[in-house]
Image (cartoon, rainbow, N blue to C red; front, side, top):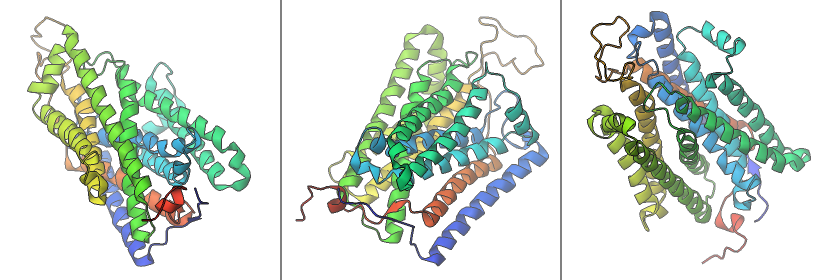
Length: 407
């Protein structure tokens, strides 16, 4: 590879400030939605005493999972010695931190009362996976910041490989912790599964890569920087492989459930009788979020076009949101078997549904809060590339490939 030179994002000021104004407006609307829900109480949302994690949690968990996956591009260069990816590490680190901050912001604003954050930061129950995640998230931000410093500061370059390994291991632990939130909840039929942790890890690979591809292509195009076919094809092929791996884990998860008799009712609920959850699973997650992107990426013609890669990346992200909706909300909507094989005559604790799915209808403020978190993450990324030397001046084929020959 030729020597890579970095430069701040040179997009024209009117377009740059216009982009930030749009993202700030979206984030501001999300903030007003959070204020509306906090002031009036969560009764104005679709959440209730049975389904306590709504759309904000869907967006928050999606962004957190994607954040750890966005760091993989940097890890390919430092951990696995892929020189072609070393030039991508700076943007990878900043995008990872921005996505995590956006996800955590949505999560914090969905607490209902802001003072609960103080309780969460000062009182720890280490038997709870939530207490572990506070350290995992804060540690991720600190470690990735140091990792970025070792990339950008020449005197610190000698620590770059070691920090790369440390950051990669930490992101695996972080995503394991996020997946284990569901895997450790034994009371919910759809959550209690050890496969949740590795499935969340592979989902992070796909969603992080999709986010990275879209940001990379957008920033390079807006600034008129060359982006070679060789690098782009390698990244989109990785997206296809990660998407295929997610599909594999989804199949294994449901085949395992179908093998165990105790899970038959839950799987029938998700795969056949769940209404919106069944539709989102088959159409949103499996078809549009997995099969169609794989078809585009590996198509001999579509997979080589920028439009095809953008479409595949967007579909993977939309499929990821559908997946989180099915997992997070569908898992709560399926009724808990508090007294198996018994009929509850009367109860004042909302458990007298006798096997009927629980109802949840998301409200507009919940969606606005989640979209605001994505806007915050993108705005932070664009400010970063504008202020810091994160983007290579060129990623043309002759720069990243020493054996490239011009036709």
